[in-house]
Length: 309
Image (cartoon, rainbow, N blue to C red; front, side, top):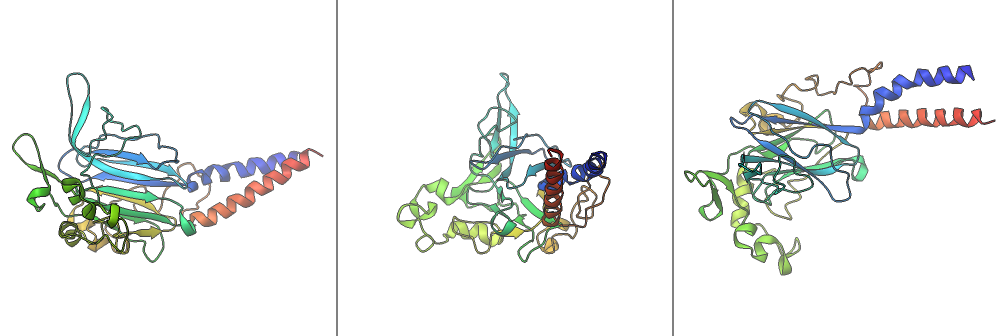
């Protein structure tokens, strides 16, 4: 019995160190010269993250952990303020919660979206940056430490607000500054732009002149509903850096290998640091570590069963 207890105590620090293996970290970085209020919405049927919205001043960053198999979206809200009654609202990307936290609400278009499905088919993370709901802020997603043929950065690093077609522009109340660019679907609400009705399939819904403006400026971002082939990316065992207003040295071109010229976060070498861990598993993949933990759990279970006899 004492031997079993000793073995369980030996396994405890290993289990503790592995607790972070089953989560994916998202490091949100604001390189804009203005404040951004990121919003987060979890997919239907997925438990929401503990935080659904926060403030990120210029130059600040925040790291958030998501559990295995989480899915959802991130976006940036801009031109936000609080009125005399305490009601919080944003000119772009507002989620309608009247608070900094979005609490289960999504972004009001137009908004640039970073979308994720973790641990999907084949154990891969699926992710994209979408302009299907329009555009409000430059955004870049860079995988850290992941593997796979399509494990590469994606996003829209160009400021499209000034280049936006006149009929799609959203301007501020004061001064008429261009603050966002609508999708053609939102602007005109016609089936051929919304890929709805008789245009609700890949065969019938084709790129429009408006979606091609987005695609030309941001070739890896979703420009319309069926823009899958060039806009969906996959990684195994990755963490992610999401940057608003990325600087030139974190552009898509310089991050094709997704571990080059990225901000130094959580150790700065593309691996995550598990504080307090007695064992270094940073070089192993999450898949390998899951198998290790499975063996450990099975061993502990056998020992517990033996105690009953």
